Amino acid sequence: MLNPEALSFAEEMIKSQLTTLDDLPKELANTTANIFYKFALIGIEGKDRIGWVPQQVLREQKGMQEGLKKYSEHCATVMSDLKAVIAFIELLRKTNKSLKPNLYSDLVDYCLDNLKYNIKNVDRKPLVVRKMERPFKKIDEIEGLVDLMRFD
Image (tube, rainbow, N blue to C red):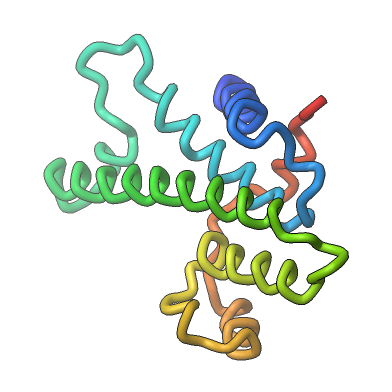
């Protein structure tokens, strides 16, 4: 179930950082929306609650210390993904899609392989190999999330 407050916060952050996602390929736009949504969830999850402990920490079977470690890793990954997707999109928007369609397409694939499919060593693998890996990767996204956001 979506958190409406996090969805609204993510939408406002996208407008502030990137203005819109309407100019991007649908898959990349949805991945971007998901990254901003994950960041928003972290930001509002413990809001206004003194002594709050994330549910992810409490659910850890190996104890609170292991839970805190995993939660910290999750937060670091989300922060890293957020910075990366903003940089990728800025680069993508500087690429002339009509003059260099292959470069544009390669940049989109590179971004998705890094941020959606979490393929290791993307820069060392040819696209055909990465495309063969994609079906075997676990995707941690809400399908169609970008369709719930408005950027006008």
